Image (cartoon, rainbow, N blue to C red):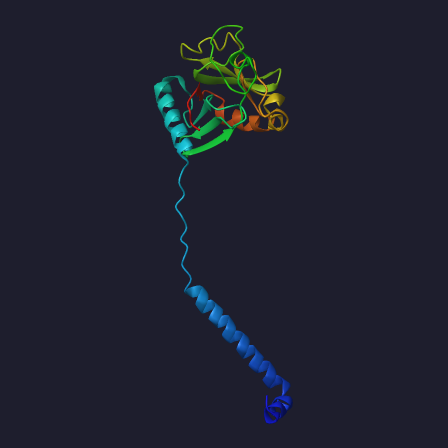
Length: 222
């Protein structure tokens, strides 16, 4: 800087200095905005339903149609996929009207998993087998039982038509709570009932009671 320019600068009014500083900042901001304007645009991606959920809805619709004459309500179908271990959410609420699937944990019967490794090995419809049965179940009235509010079931297939005699129901249970996974990596086992986490059972009662369908099998939805 020369002496003359230094003198000019030192004698420049403070307001002029402030105005020039503001202009420099505005120009810099404008350059940044122009750079942003030329950046590649990112477009929102269309939502895609997971393949697992599509398969759950398909099976729910097929089984609903198969036993529709036995149902009072066909809006929601419970689908249990016992090909998955008990550590994964494998009980699905398939809302056929909304096209939506929500999933929670569910325990299987001790007779279906003698080694208690968390995997269902086989189904049974026999009295005192303590095993899970496969097939279509129709929900009946709810009642207060050993585990609190529970839903009675009627099995409508040859593989589960002893459900009432075996007292197979849907109920909440402490051994089906998520904290079991933190301790053991698997849920506890029922006596063949659909045992669900205590915090989720109110939702199950509301969605499944009063003549709705539950379908259970080894479905391989993973």
